Length: 137
Image (cartoon, rainbow, N blue to C red):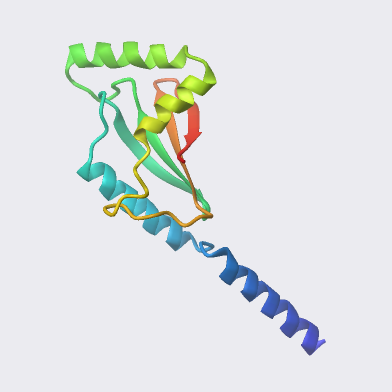
């Protein structure tokens, strides 16, 4: 029984080491880098970072508000809402391509590469909620 238990522990440890990014702290550290990235390089088009979620150790979601929610300039708010509606009416492939505009350059020296097992998504949101989620390449 002791040998079986030791073998099971050894297999579990091996799998944990091979998976690389199994602790929530790894994903949280990447999310912190993303927060700093978006702070240093704000989004264009009146888009606003609405938060970064880490639903699992292998998935990070950058939430982007695109309808001007929170803007005080009435002209900018109207333009943002119109753009959000135009994006929402496009087909899914176009929406995903547009969402990927908000993806950071994870190959750059400033950001650094993501671990291979971590998937990074951009979720575009309007006042009704999330309407498209695209994986960054």
